[in-house]
Length: 189
Image (cartoon, rainbow, N blue to C red; front, side):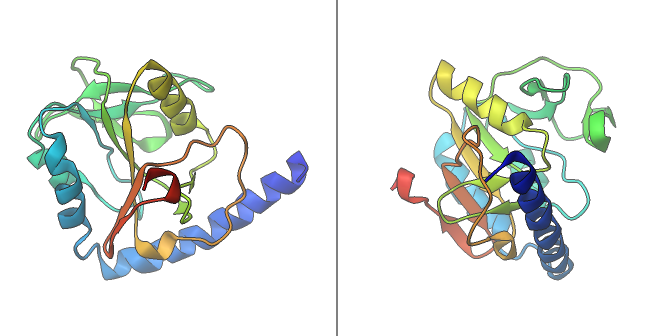
């Protein structure tokens, strides 16, 4: 695919995925947080990166609040840069960050060992389609180069697509958790 074709294909995939996510969000997350808590249980004590849900994203906040270890959320530090992660706890003062994401006003900078990754769409191979900034791809590449990290996509099952338009820089997820259970991509079995 040429760059123009790939850009168009990603835009079309995002449009379809946003519709599917909004419809699933209207129904609710079902057992998604229960499944996520089960996946995270063996990782108690590790630094967990979650996220502050925006729009119709599935919300990991209950699981983040219950995690038995440090929790942080992503902060966009600049275009083309990997994410940084600031410590978060229930009740901490939050402010608007880049692109409308809520971030802690203050706190330590942490390096996550486990990430709950938001997404627009995913496929059975463990790849995700994000919003197009490449922040998580750059972040996962950097974290993986530095050591072991677990990347868990968190989504509604309706966000699964059969054929995502991919680029060589796209980083796969290790697991994907939905209200229907846990998907273990072939590269992680």
